[in-house]
Image (cartoon, rainbow, N blue to C red; front, side, top):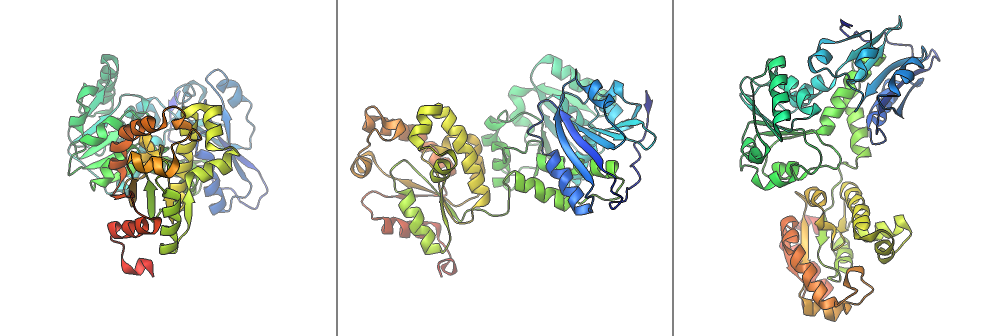
Length: 464
């Protein structure tokens, strides 16, 4: 197979009526944002006769799928596990794709050739450049999987000194050193147990799956460099949230995804410049990462009065009120207690996590969360930087207010003791996310509301 530059197709006439097709392939592929991004580009470019779909295809089915494609096909985006499996099926691949033995883009030329390219690497570089990272004298890579090799290739033109890769196991360490030698990058490997040391580098690239770096978040240095976290859903990760809270620049996986998709659109359609901003907006909207943010978020134990105080606070601020428990009941068509019975607590927490993410991203008023919402690390990360108020109360007050009866799913046995147990387990989590704590014992809802306003030191013009 020859090494070939992937020349963009000649741009088609959007009024010609000729349907052009493209798609993303992988297994699984249902989660892919590529259709959202490419369709947004087509709409912005006026390519009304272009379509972009997704197909679940594994290595076994890939040859037959590609052979079945007709002349209307312009290109394919490839995700795992197809980035290497596709190479023998192509007529040529670019030098970039050859350098990491991975193809994420296939362009079908006018004369029927199939040419492979890799837009992940230039997408990473473009995302870093967009955030002002042109050159660093050292860098850290967290992880040693396939994405780490792309990160190494991207760093080849950015890092002038040593790259330290923190990995698990001798095999991955050896692979990273081999990739470094192949790409001309000075790579040193270190054990994952020492990964916190790598956070002091001027550039840290995290290529790990969700949750792997959560334990590193408390160890972020007080003056961090730039973090490039390749994850984008859920966002932010615990590491990214802590990094941002300390004032460090953060590049997200969505930045990478959008920039590599821009290059794919340009190669497949022949357009000189794909609409970056329109594609980014579409991605952020789909992920619930809009510009709106709640004015205040109330957290605290069941029965503390979040709903009552939240509505009063919203009235004082002249904004809307939203309760994620209400969202869940409305969406599921079941009470919280019924969901606990049907799904168990893990099932309910998964539903709650999605509800909180949507509400945090899409509500600009006062938001109240269920008592256990803060148990999820991603939820806590999403609350970073918001005005979070912990409404607190003692067990005696809880008994007086709600009786701690069995109607509450987690208080069905020995309610007072169970309530105390839950509070002891959650107290430090409330403290982690809250900007202020307001005690509600012996206070009326109106008094608590005023105490919240005072504690947050709200500007007077916000109350007019």
